[in-house]
Length: 112
Image 1: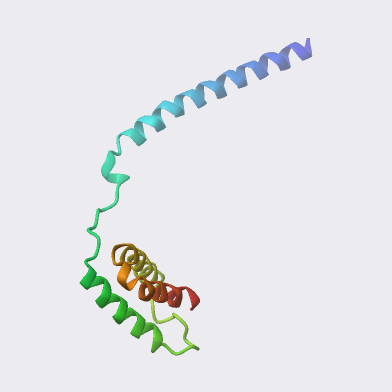
Image 2: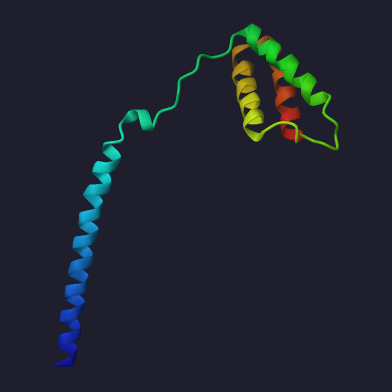
């Protein structure tokens, strides 16, 4: 008799947990669906022009080269460095003539 009561209690508990789980799923799904694409997308930016790429490469390389080795890249934020490296990657692909300069700048960013 005691085993029968334990099984009954377990069935009630399992049934309640299943209902709770099934109740949360659709709510979560509807909540995510209601956020719309704007919450999931990022701003689309135009690729930099060749002139912008070359100017930024010269400026950033000069800044990196005059930074004291003891300071490393402490003078630059992580976000700034990630942005520079990302732009240099775009520039490398869009301006093959100056590819080596962009790669050198990316290497300088990574090495510090």
